[in-house]
Amino acid sequence: MAPQNLNQVFVINNPDMFSTTTFSNTAATTNATRLGAWDVYNATPTNVVSALFTSGVPNFKSIQFTQTMLSGNCIATPIIDLKDIVRINYREYTSAVPNVQKAVIDAGGSAAAATSGSDPIMMRIAIRTAPTNYEYFANPASSYGDLSGGGYTFPLIGNFSAGRMIFNIEIPETVHSPGGTYSETALITALFNNFSGTTANKTLQAIFAATDSGTSGLELVARHYGVTFDVTLTQNSTAQGTVSMSMVAPTAASNYILAVADEKKQRERYGNFNRMYFPMDFPTFAQPTYKYDIIDIAYKHSHPASTGIARAAELNTLRIYAGASSTALSYAGASTGTELATVFGYTGGTDSEQLF
Image (cartoon, rainbow, N blue to C red; front, side):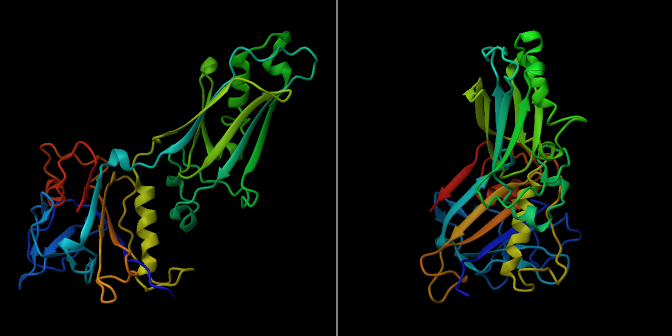
């Protein structure tokens, strides 16, 4: 196998830093992990609770980041020379939530009147991509993968070998134009009934959270992260109304789907299991209700003598998910997370990226 860069993922459920000098601390439970940032240049490792950099200048010679485990040794990065850190990116929970695709289908009031007895209106949905997040493969029946909070799992609808999956919904003129008079509200309600209630198409219901907004249109929001789709509305092959596409924040209670997927995916780096099965039990520390900030650290390495296993000119990375509970971290006058923010030079309020 060719060498790979060292991509590590830590999940920190207690964002205050260590104040002890005991290097290999253990976590009492999976929701009590802590982060260590150790100045290992001294004879006795010292936990760092002050800024790594001041105005871009390293405050220490070298650092080693650790995450506590339930027993045994902690998970640790290589010893990193601070001069080799090239980027620290800090994203608060609000910007770390994965967006999902939304469509608003506004049929408008100008659809052609039904006069011939065969003027149905057709809505066509093309599903272009299925969920690609690792957790949807590792645990496809997980209800928390539904970011709308509805508890639906993404249905098995094909392998997308043709690049898309097509669904057609036809509304006859007797429904959208009762008595020969076009009714936008009747059309939208008829479309909506395909996504909700006892008449719903169960596959479409599992893919989309729908809202009947009357003359403002039908709103469709993908329930699962990574799903993209197109929508058209036609009558006798003539486009009707407008379709507005956008990316929106879901109503999910947390960004757990990102944290648990990254945590499981990085296990392939540890070498204690193969890539088809998990023969050895390994604790998962990401918590379903927690709201995580995300810290990304990229650092250089020597080649061929290296702190990691990357090729020449590639960077090693560390991603840290940090959260305290189902309440997002707050830094102004907060009692938790302040040491974490201090270490990474983060003041709160806006995302931060430091390039060195």
